[in-house]
Image (cartoon, rainbow, N blue to C red):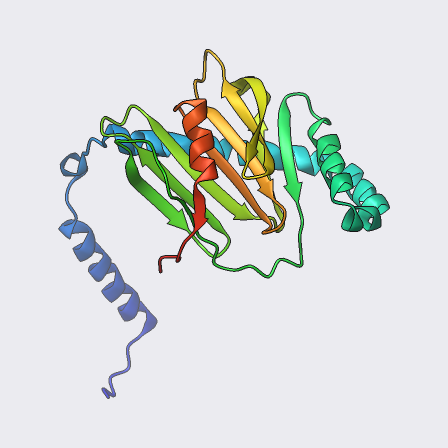
Length: 233
């Protein structure tokens, strides 16, 4: 080990020279220009919409927190023993705001970890173009060969989470059945052709959300084909 004692100023000067050397090795901004593919831009747009919905829902829940806490405390025992009552309570929460439908969950006894679902059927010509997952959340994005048609499969554990849809984005809500579980299919309007299918698997404590600009039949078929798979590391 060297016995040379370096002063703080000498160390600062050395660090500055190293930083300057690293900066000069980087390419100029003009050399870094890149045109992203339509598939990538569409995937980012899906993520931006999801992020925006979460921010709006978070603000609303901040304003409604006191009302919700009082309500949950007053009916907590009732909800733990009556599944139909739980469904009615969710409907009551969904009816609080006309512009936004919110699914709120708070299940502290969820012991499921590293969930991983994937569709066993997707429309012809589609393939996986983006994928993100962790121990309790997953987002898969699929697109066709041209990138004009896309859909995403999103799911998360019912543990301290929420999922929302903005009513203005949809013109109609249709009740459908996903392997015996009731689901809401939100159909797009003139300004937004996307559709969203949301359902809650209470037995496995998982919330699903499929969105895309594909047909109603295909979205339902994809949902019905979801199966558990081995999670990727």
